[in-house]
Image: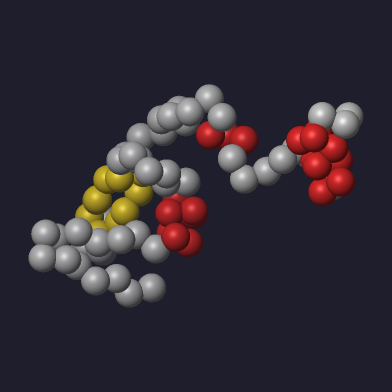
Length: 77
């Protein structure tokens, strides 16, 4: 996954890598050099989610289908 360095020295971390490392906006990363001389990127620290709802982002709940979700949204349930 190639990336381009900007004139300011910035690089966009590809989404698959961000997902693999669990990086979210505001995450801090650490660059380390390993014994082989390669530079390794890893999360700098495990921080709690910035929002109390962040851990629920991306899913509506286990076992709910679209009709059940729409009924809850409309207040029909």
